Length: 116
Image (cartoon, rainbow, N blue to C red; front, side):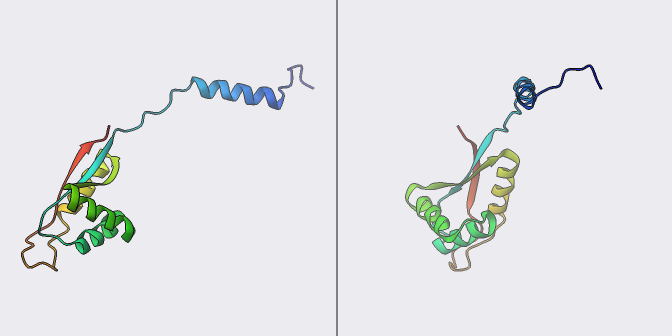
């Protein structure tokens, strides 16, 4: 037998919480918005399809984004880390023209902006 005092479960839980409280919390990476900008060379169907393929948004969310872009001139598609936001912006720029409109010459415009 050991002469060391036994630790109760309750004491062990309290000790574990104290150790956890002393550990610094990991810092969250800053967040960035992926912003889609309006133009007259892309249809709602194009935006809905792009939102589904690039972001995994359901058609309802794609429709909401398409309407917001049309009415307000821009829409936030996603808020994420800078690296991921840059990737999504670049994917929008590489998505290609809207085949439903003859005047469409290329992809829509997108940018990233720090989230507040």
